[in-house]
Amino acid sequence: MKWAALLLMAIGCSDNILEVERNYINATDPLPFYFGAEAEQGYSENQWTPVYYYYIYQIEEGEYDAYFHCYLMNGDTVMYSGVTKVYPEYGKTVYGEYKPDVDFPAYGMGDVIPMAMIRVEGVR
Image (cartoon, rainbow, N blue to C red; front, side, top):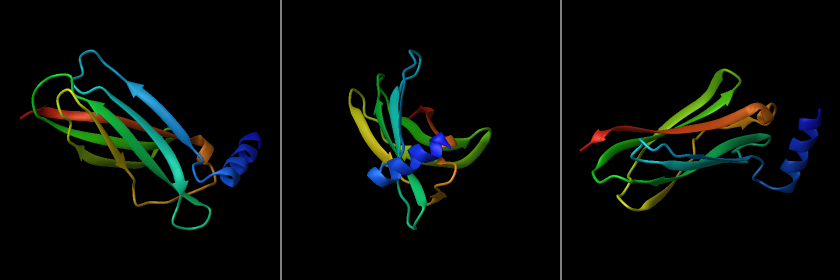
């Protein structure tokens, strides 16, 4: 009940009713990245849609086939998964966004956890 009241207050205050940020850096990873997720008003009333954003930094020279994978988890269940190709550049931070064309009901939104990863298929 406490979460429901907090969710209703957040909905009334802004269109951004969920914001999560994560930073993943691994010394062996050629593409460390940072991602965040926000919820925006969906296409219909009492619906929301996630917006993922990411920053990728390429620390090793080369051209990589890389993909941004995003997920919405509710407990052990994957509610949504999406993927988009990313275009990193050596020595530069690349910003990108991914917004799925799906809506989710506001009920139970507090239990949803956004997750993401970068998959690298190799150097071209």
